[in-house]
Image 1 (tube, one colour):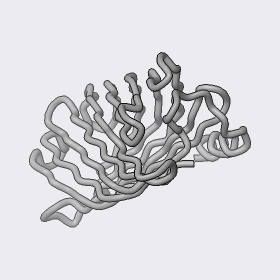
Image 2 (tube, rainbow, N blue to C red):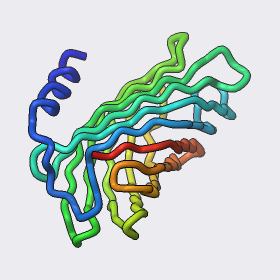
Image 3 (cartoon, rainbow, N blue to C red):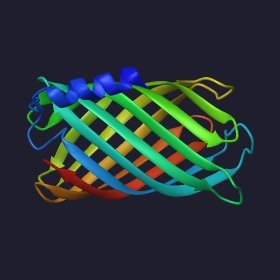
Image 4 (cartoon, rainbow, N blue to C red):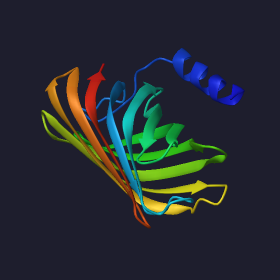
Length: 192
């Protein structure tokens, strides 16, 4: 935990000015509704849950950004909750005036309570683009490795944001994990 706090303090101390494609900002915070459907949970193979998530990103140094998210969901027909968080660093490389290539690595933790938990890492690569002045999207391919009996899996992540103005929009995201786990998110985003 001390190492994570050190990384967060370093990111906060650095100037928030990164080189990103026109119309793309790596400085944002968003929160909203999240839901999951799991066919690969270690206890029950058909688990649905829903709740809320908060996510954010902060640009530092040219082409780098720190990101993190936290999700809290209640598992349907169960006293268990699903808590998941991750903290990572990403690199964005402009390939056109409106498109960046992305590489991201993160430490993550998953906890269902009652001793059912895991931690590990994830790696993602993909692209993010300003499709229209008010619409941006991204596509990422990833791999996550968790301990404690959870399978390591490849996944795809698709997301988009509709901007009402330069600072406010609505974002959505879907993560499709090989083997049957699906995670959704939708909510407002504040960008600066």
